[in-house]
Length: 87
Image 1 (cartoon, rainbow, N blue to C red):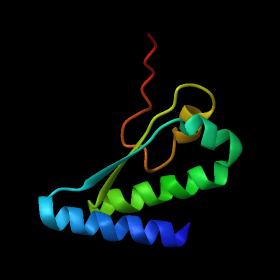
Image 2 (image 1 turned 120 degrees about the vertical axis):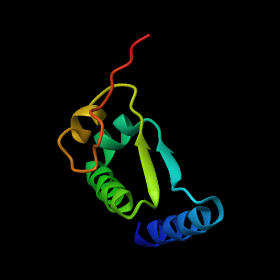
Image 3 (image 1 turned 90 degrees about the horizontal axis):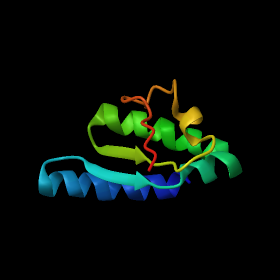
């Protein structure tokens, strides 16, 4: 996981240098990750907080249902309360 995050940060730095703004990464279906590997979700949340502080990457977590939104609430990386959209 560490080498993957190092790669993501190096790409994000190049993106910011070229475009002058932070990169955006969207993680879809995090409810599945929250169920199968909550520790990885916590790592991603911590990285989201760190990259937001550095203004390098904007992490977007998308969940269709399940425990994903509950796992995001109250974490320092959550700048906006989780939104619930139902069709």
